[in-house]
Amino acid sequence: MAEEASFMRAPAPAPKRTIYTEAMEIFNRAADLINLDSRVRLELEEPDYEHIFYVTAKLRDRLVPVSPEKASEFSDLPATQVRNPEGLERLMDGRIILNGKALLGSDVSIRNGHLRLSDGNIYELVPGGSERFKAYRVQHNQARGPYKGGTRYHLNVSLDLFKALAAEMTWKTAIAEVPFGGGKGGLQIDPRQYGKEELEAITLRYMYKLKNMIGPDLDIPAPDVGTNGAIMALMYRQYSDGERERHNMRGVVTGKDVRIGGSEGRVKATGQGVIFCVEDYYAAHGDTIKGKSFIIQGFGNVGSNAALILHKLGAKLLAVNDADGTIYNPEGLDVPALVEHTRAPDNLKRSVLGFSGGQVISKSDFWRVPADVCLPAALGGEITADVAESLQVKVVAEGANGPTTPEADRVLQERGITLIPDIIANAGGVTVSYYEWIQNKRMERWTEEAVDRRLELALKRNYRTILDISRGEGRRTEMHDSRPFVIGKPVDTRCAAMILALKRIEAHYMLEGFSQ
Ligand code: NAD
Image (cartoon, rainbow, N blue to C red; front, side, top):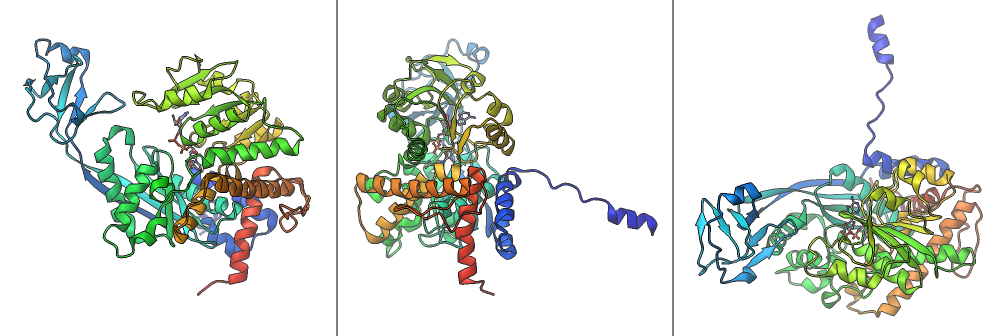
């Protein structure tokens, strides 16, 4: 009995720290500070729905390059003259997809499943089989409107990660004041290992399974890492094909090409939004972005568009780090030329490496480059406490989602480095997604200037509100009114942003009540 009692008193094991629990630390801190209603807190602590499912697809035959030792066994094999070279689709890792009847009518010399192409290399012909992919859609909260959030195609995804990203969308849509909730999803896949037609089949199948969980007024996916407007077009087609009122369904996904109902300014919107926030930060200090220096991690949609905009504003980009390496030029990189380099058709990795206008440096040296602003625009968790210690910048503007760990946050604060948190800094994407959704609903088309003007006002108004909450002083100006949100004492900016989100979400629950 005594033994049992002591067992009962044993302390509960500390909950495992995961990406989600780490992401929710700031939620808990802000919820404590504003004394968030306990039931609202329970509603927000876990997602409404967590969908996990699987999609299967049939793959094409592939030609896989072999090692030099293996190739030497076929030194006498003559080259195959391919009659239909358009049918060969080269992938980044050297593999080649055989589309359609790529080899039909060709004079094929094949031995033990190996053949030589006119590039002189020996390839193994691997027949296409079927493959299964794990798929997700997490719907975190819809108190303020339909679930909204990106679709990620990446190998390193999990339910835990999508929960964190979906929750972040709930906060972000509240901060950006767009009438949406939060969601996120995607596939566990490295899209660079598949041909265009294979990715089409996989995406159509993903949407086929997703169809009964989403909709233009229910849950609206958008592009994220590894997806783009072309993937959104496929998702839209699969969702709406054969439906009687398919044109009313255009808003089921955002981030579409402008020619099929996308919004002007959406492609650059996230990068544009980060730069609007940085501009406003300098404006608050009576300064401008002109002449300021930047380092950027990640040169995809967000990083490259932010770079083009800051270049136009007269700022200098000193270094870029991406998944494949880092380039650096103390005089400033030629941004338009670098963007052209990464988007060149033969740069299959879309990497900054190989750019002639800069020198290669290591990733650890990248973080040490002295600059005014560091703009992380790659994946989460990249700015660790060690990285935060080595940064030689004055401002970190988070283009990526969750790039700074909680430990690194503390280091940045101790070192007096200003943080513009992701939930406002990269909210430009979802804000213009909202504009796209309205345009789809109204069958309208806005100009890029109109979109940019609205976006600038929306982001700056909310960023100023966050800065006031952070200072602990409410204000009413022509542009914004932060008085209902301040808590009477200063807090860090990430916490201030979360306070703004929670107060806006809480109002919905408190004013609308709970259905039983
Ligand atoms: P993208 O796929 O277009 O580009 C990603 C970039 O990150 C590439 O340059 C890649 O090389 C680089 N990268 C990947 N792994 C890396 C690593 N380990 N180290 C260094 N660099 C690495 O993606 P994107 O759409 O530009 O998104 C970037 C970030 O911004 C993500 O965190 C995403 O969630 C966030 N975000 C994107 C949008 C949007 O509208 N696209 C909106 C809000 C937030």
